[in-house]
Length: 282
Image 1 (tube, rainbow, N blue to C red):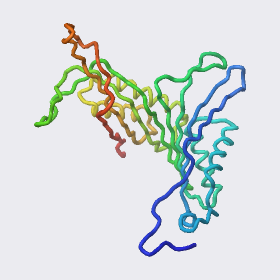
Image 2 (image 1 turned 30 degrees about the vertical axis):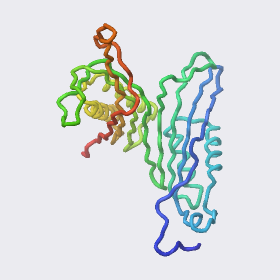
Image 3 (image 1 turned 90 degrees about the vertical axis):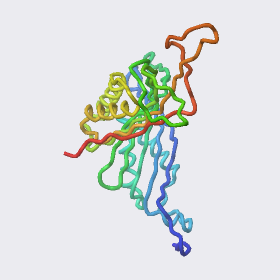
Image 4 (image 1 turned 180 degrees about the vertical axis):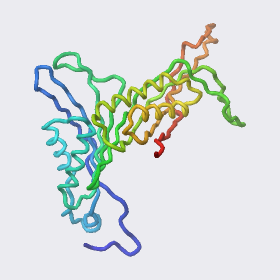
């Protein structure tokens, strides 16, 4: 292997296949089932040679990684967390130069409208999973992305810092809307990943609906805490909550009042609230 030029060295690196679109139809009975996934792989390891000299001896092609996803789906998906872990373990355990693998999955929902007919989900919500494996234990993360939520009331925002550039008025009643991205790490694997995901998602919805919000930060913490209470195997929840602003429209120029019923849904810019809620060590 040709050494790097003096004063330079290779830093952290990975390679993989992104955006592997996979649809599997279960045909075991006349009532079919469908799973729709997007899979992303990323491998790390002893890959200095390919960077320095183009020696690809240790490189498992990204096309092979793609084909492996489809081949593994032949025998069924199971839980998305389990599918991600099986793939990650395979890449590390079978490719000599690969010492680490990270597999991320997004599941696209379909609604059943018949025994073999389905309608695409309208809200854009995705279930997410990630498995990272380095030859010993696998680290598993589950979550959701783009879960659209809205409260028409029970939300305020006041008492904030104001300076010479502040124009935002205080309000004691506002529409609170967001598109939740949440990810929770498992300290130990739950007995049933699907059941744990269902409990976490239900806790998220309950916390959002049941929290009288004085700030989106307060809502974020309430959601994270509720997920940790509902899923004892989870150790940390990371949340990203964009504030989907809704502006009360002034209808006075048309001779009309607006008793809090007509709003403009804002686009850009938007507030972005992010944070993590962790379980304290015993």
